[in-house]
Length: 150
Image (cartoon, rainbow, N blue to C red):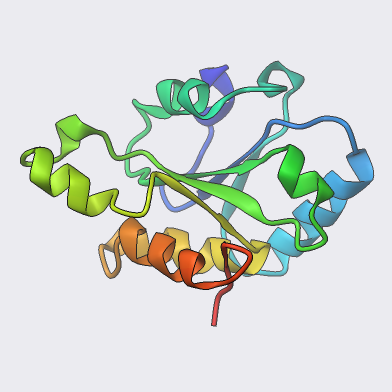
């Protein structure tokens, strides 16, 4: 499965399709992402069908400069917002200690974002301007748990 990740450009957000039940919904997700001005590497390969978060993180662990992965999963395809699942690639080994890891994952290792939020999240994490935990906290503040880019 990691073959589709190798072609990702250094500054590209990574979006992996894991649900293949609705091609029209996928086309809508792609169209919304392309409107967001983000540089995106799409992985649209049925080998990823049903992949779980841990499967994706295992495949992406060797990708350089990748702090977040976006999944177009079953919920994405069913949601009117087409909210993708943003997942941090941060592991305990990336942190100074357990306390640092707990702080950086205080609000979990995943949250939902609208397609418009992908560019904002990916760009700011890439340059270290904001942390994953800040976006997760903002998503959590919304009643539906979805981050919306300002």
